[in-house]
Figure 1: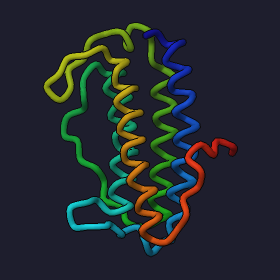
Figure 2 (figure 1 turned 135 degrees about the vertical axis):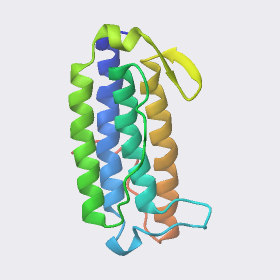
Figure 3 (figure 1 turned 90 degrees about the horizontal axis):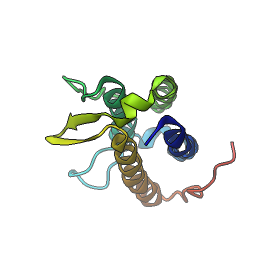
Figure 4 (figure 1 turned 180 degrees about the vertical axis):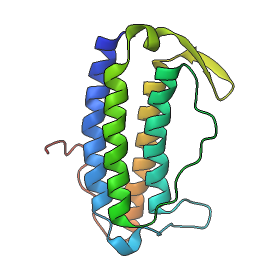
Amino acid sequence: MNKQMAEGMFGYFRMVLGVTRKLVDQFPADKMTFKPTDAQRTVAETVVHMYYFLLIALESIRDGKTPENMTEPKISGKAELLAYMDKNVEAANKIFAGLTDEQLARMIEAWGMTFPAWQMLTFLNDEHWHHRGALTVYLRLCGIEPIMIYSYEQ
């Protein structure tokens, strides 16, 4: 995959990120620590995980390896969480803009596997949708009807 093809994929993902932000904004501030069971992450922990991985995936493509010492920040307030999302999207857009065909095509190692770096974009997409689906269930459990998942208008 070259940069032009990746741009189409990541361009769509930017719209997905915008919808996810609207979905997270639907949660009342007092529901950031909600989780259906003790085995699940809270709303805030889930969102932090999603947006932390956004940077991990792109940094891995840029750097040719996954970062060392990965520790997700602890955020529990709604305003802080939305700001974290915005900051990571901005950083991700900058990283993506600087990626080259060579960086996307090279082989990288992550999680005990070796694969083309561009594959991180598909992992990113899968990971994001997986957790966003959980967030829609969390909303329903809180008695809130989630926005349409294809609500791409800004």
